[in-house]
Length: 175
Image 1 (cartoon, rainbow, N blue to C red):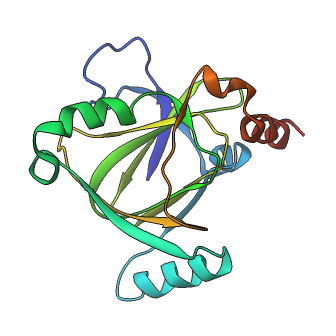
Image 2 (tube, helix red, strand yellow):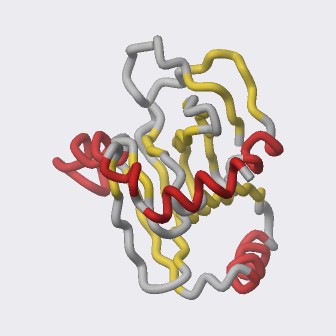
């Protein structure tokens, strides 16, 4: 995992790095509620299962985002995932294979890009503005974890500005 300020002046494809050279630390991510773990080796699944039990994640599924897996809808889906949005639940992802980017808004509304790869476990809090894209390799295989039934319901900006989960999130990072 590597996190840095996203270069909004760079108008190239969203799957490019857009790296300003300004790094962000795990502490910076933690201040905005983003949690990160690295699970490697033979015990990776056990570590993941322990965390899932501790955080009461009851359900999981897998998703492969690639042109081969998604066919003709791939480009439209990647564009849709890149629309700025929130969820009313945590977004929990463990990367099984491949690479991609999660972009999150920090407390100053600046985009922070989080590059993820196999073994990275990322939790985005409910109410945080974010978006996702594959990188130029156009492939990621991830395990999605859920506290309840699997739901992926984005609420796009600006509609989410008045959402109760968004307001609670803002309170949590400004307290």
